[in-house]
Length: 56
Length: 138
Image 1 (spheres, rainbow over the protein chains, first blue to last red):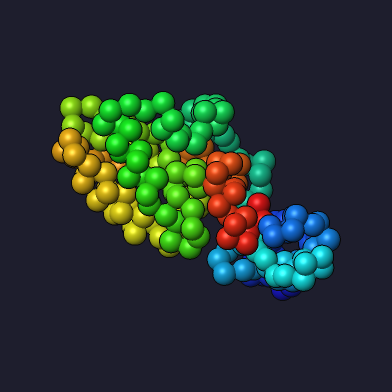
Image 2 (image 1 turned 120 degrees about the horizontal axis):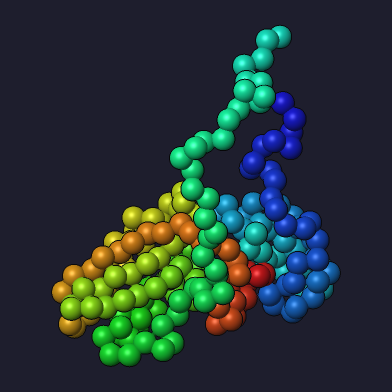
Protein backbone atom coordinates (compact mmCIF):
# COMPACT_ATOMS: atom_id res chain seq x y z
CA UNK A 1 0.00 0.00 0.00
CA UNK A 2 1.55 3.27 -1.08
CA UNK A 3 1.32 5.87 1.63
CA UNK A 4 0.10 8.61 -0.68
CA UNK A 5 -3.13 6.71 -1.34
CA UNK A 6 -4.41 7.59 2.11
CA UNK A 7 -6.91 10.43 1.51
CA UNK A 8 -6.60 11.61 5.10
CA UNK A 9 -3.05 12.87 4.52
CA UNK A 10 -3.40 14.39 1.06
CA UNK A 11 -4.95 17.59 -0.15
CA UNK A 12 -5.25 19.47 -3.39
CA UNK A 13 -3.56 22.78 -2.60
CA UNK A 14 0.04 23.93 -2.52
CA UNK A 15 2.15 23.28 0.57
CA UNK A 16 3.23 26.89 0.87
CA UNK A 17 2.34 30.38 -0.31
CA UNK A 18 -1.27 30.55 0.82
CA UNK A 19 -2.32 34.11 1.59
CA UNK A 20 -2.60 34.76 5.30
CA UNK A 21 -6.12 36.02 6.07
CA UNK A 22 -4.77 38.25 8.87
CA UNK A 23 -1.77 40.07 7.36
CA UNK A 24 -1.98 39.04 3.68
CA UNK A 25 1.58 37.70 3.71
CA UNK A 26 2.32 34.70 1.50
CA UNK A 27 5.29 33.65 3.66
CA UNK A 28 3.24 30.73 4.92
CA UNK A 29 3.64 26.99 5.26
CA UNK A 30 1.07 24.22 5.35
CA UNK A 31 1.29 22.40 8.64
CA UNK A 32 -1.34 19.77 8.01
CA UNK A 33 -3.39 18.80 4.95
CA UNK A 34 -6.58 18.50 6.98
CA UNK A 35 -8.22 21.05 9.19
CA UNK A 36 -11.46 21.00 11.18
CA UNK A 37 -13.32 19.82 8.10
CA UNK A 38 -12.33 17.88 4.99
CA UNK A 39 -12.32 20.97 2.79
CA UNK A 40 -9.82 22.91 4.91
CA UNK A 41 -6.11 22.57 5.60
CA UNK A 42 -4.00 24.04 8.40
CA UNK A 43 -1.33 26.63 7.63
CA UNK A 44 1.07 28.81 9.61
CA UNK A 45 2.06 32.38 8.80
CA UNK A 46 5.75 33.13 9.42
CA UNK A 47 5.09 36.84 9.09
CA UNK A 48 2.51 37.40 11.84
CA UNK A 49 3.15 34.04 13.52
CA UNK A 50 -0.48 32.95 13.45
CA UNK A 51 -2.01 29.65 12.44
CA UNK A 52 -4.85 29.84 9.94
CA UNK A 53 -7.01 27.61 7.78
CA UNK A 54 -7.28 27.53 4.02
CA UNK A 55 -10.17 26.45 1.85
CA UNK A 56 -8.97 23.62 -0.40
CA UNK B 1 -1.59 -13.46 -10.20
CA UNK B 2 -4.77 -13.37 -12.25
CA UNK B 3 -6.46 -10.10 -13.01
CA UNK B 4 -10.19 -9.39 -13.00
CA UNK B 5 -9.81 -6.26 -15.06
CA UNK B 6 -11.69 -6.75 -18.32
CA UNK B 7 -9.75 -6.39 -21.51
CA UNK B 8 -10.79 -2.99 -22.78
CA UNK B 9 -10.93 -4.18 -26.36
CA UNK B 10 -14.25 -5.78 -25.32
CA UNK B 11 -15.67 -2.46 -24.22
CA UNK B 12 -18.45 -0.90 -26.26
CA UNK B 13 -19.86 2.56 -25.65
CA UNK B 14 -23.32 2.61 -24.12
CA UNK B 15 -25.85 3.25 -26.85
CA UNK B 16 -28.27 4.92 -24.45
CA UNK B 17 -26.04 7.66 -23.17
CA UNK B 18 -26.88 11.15 -24.25
CA UNK B 19 -23.94 13.47 -23.67
CA UNK B 20 -24.91 17.06 -23.17
CA UNK B 21 -22.96 20.19 -22.41
CA UNK B 22 -23.33 21.24 -18.78
CA UNK B 23 -24.89 24.53 -17.88
CA UNK B 24 -22.76 27.63 -17.91
CA UNK B 25 -21.74 28.76 -14.44
CA UNK B 26 -21.37 32.37 -15.52
CA UNK B 27 -24.59 33.50 -13.82
CA UNK B 28 -24.12 31.34 -10.75
CA UNK B 29 -24.47 31.38 -7.88
CA UNK B 30 -27.76 33.25 -7.70
CA UNK B 31 -27.85 35.98 -5.09
CA UNK B 32 -31.26 37.51 -5.67
CA UNK B 33 -29.93 41.00 -6.27
CA UNK B 34 -32.66 41.79 -8.76
CA UNK B 35 -35.45 39.99 -6.91
CA UNK B 36 -38.60 41.93 -6.10
CA UNK B 37 -41.65 41.46 -3.92
CA UNK B 38 -42.12 38.02 -2.43
CA UNK B 39 -38.97 36.61 -4.02
CA UNK B 40 -36.94 39.37 -2.36
CA UNK B 41 -38.47 38.40 1.00
CA UNK B 42 -37.41 34.80 0.36
CA UNK B 43 -33.86 35.91 -0.44
CA UNK B 44 -33.81 37.91 2.79
CA UNK B 45 -34.47 34.84 4.93
CA UNK B 46 -31.98 32.80 2.90
CA UNK B 47 -29.32 35.40 3.64
CA UNK B 48 -30.11 34.87 7.30
CA UNK B 49 -29.09 31.18 7.19
CA UNK B 50 -25.45 30.51 7.98
CA UNK B 51 -23.16 27.62 7.22
CA UNK B 52 -23.00 25.44 10.36
CA UNK B 53 -19.19 25.57 10.46
CA UNK B 54 -18.38 29.10 9.40
CA UNK B 55 -19.92 32.53 9.92
CA UNK B 56 -20.98 32.95 6.32
CA UNK B 57 -24.45 33.13 4.79
CA UNK B 58 -25.33 30.18 2.56
CA UNK B 59 -26.10 32.71 -0.18
CA UNK B 60 -22.58 34.19 0.01
CA UNK B 61 -21.16 30.68 0.16
CA UNK B 62 -22.75 30.20 -3.25
CA UNK B 63 -25.12 27.36 -2.43
CA UNK B 64 -28.18 28.98 -4.03
CA UNK B 65 -28.76 28.46 -7.75
CA UNK B 66 -32.19 29.98 -8.07
CA UNK B 67 -35.40 31.09 -6.38
CA UNK B 68 -38.76 31.30 -8.09
CA UNK B 69 -42.04 32.24 -6.45
CA UNK B 70 -45.32 31.63 -8.28
CA UNK B 71 -48.85 31.34 -6.85
CA UNK B 72 -47.51 31.19 -3.31
CA UNK B 73 -45.21 28.26 -4.13
CA UNK B 74 -41.52 28.98 -3.66
CA UNK B 75 -39.14 26.83 -5.68
CA UNK B 76 -35.58 26.92 -4.38
CA UNK B 77 -32.67 25.36 -6.28
CA UNK B 78 -29.67 24.80 -4.09
CA UNK B 79 -26.54 22.69 -3.94
CA UNK B 80 -24.11 21.75 -1.19
CA UNK B 81 -20.34 22.01 -1.14
CA UNK B 82 -20.15 18.27 -1.73
CA UNK B 83 -22.67 15.45 -2.00
CA UNK B 84 -21.61 13.79 1.24
CA UNK B 85 -22.06 16.98 3.23
CA UNK B 86 -23.00 15.94 6.78
CA UNK B 87 -25.09 19.08 7.16
CA UNK B 88 -27.33 18.06 4.26
CA UNK B 89 -30.53 17.36 6.17
CA UNK B 90 -29.93 20.15 8.63
CA UNK B 91 -29.47 22.77 5.93
CA UNK B 92 -32.29 21.63 3.66
CA UNK B 93 -34.72 21.48 6.58
CA UNK B 94 -33.60 24.90 7.76
CA UNK B 95 -34.07 26.38 4.28
CA UNK B 96 -37.52 24.81 3.91
CA UNK B 97 -38.67 26.01 7.32
CA UNK B 98 -37.32 29.54 6.85
CA UNK B 99 -38.82 29.98 3.38
CA UNK B 100 -42.17 28.48 4.44
CA UNK B 101 -42.33 31.04 7.25
CA UNK B 102 -42.23 33.96 4.81
CA UNK B 103 -45.54 35.82 4.64
CA UNK B 104 -47.23 34.91 1.38
CA UNK B 105 -45.37 31.64 0.81
CA UNK B 106 -47.75 28.70 1.13
CA UNK B 107 -45.50 25.89 0.01
CA UNK B 108 -41.83 25.27 -0.61
CA UNK B 109 -40.28 23.01 -3.19
CA UNK B 110 -36.59 22.58 -2.50
CA UNK B 111 -34.63 21.03 -5.31
CA UNK B 112 -31.16 19.84 -4.38
CA UNK B 113 -29.06 19.98 -7.53
CA UNK B 114 -25.51 18.78 -8.16
CA UNK B 115 -24.82 20.41 -11.48
CA UNK B 116 -22.91 22.58 -11.92
CA UNK B 117 -20.86 21.38 -8.99
CA UNK B 118 -19.95 23.84 -6.28
CA UNK B 119 -16.42 25.23 -6.23
CA UNK B 120 -14.64 27.90 -4.20
CA UNK B 121 -15.27 30.26 -7.14
CA UNK B 122 -18.96 30.26 -6.16
CA UNK B 123 -18.19 32.22 -2.98
CA UNK B 124 -19.21 35.87 -3.38
CA UNK B 125 -16.83 38.75 -2.60
CA UNK B 126 -18.81 39.43 0.56
CA UNK B 127 -18.44 35.76 1.44
CA UNK B 128 -14.68 35.85 0.87
CA UNK B 129 -14.43 38.82 3.23
CA UNK B 130 -16.50 36.98 5.83
CA UNK B 131 -14.22 33.94 5.58
CA UNK B 132 -11.01 35.99 5.85
CA UNK B 133 -12.48 37.70 8.86
CA UNK B 134 -12.99 34.22 10.29
CA UNK B 135 -9.31 33.38 9.71
CA UNK B 136 -9.68 31.33 6.56
CA UNK B 137 -7.46 31.82 3.55
CA UNK B 138 -9.40 31.72 0.29
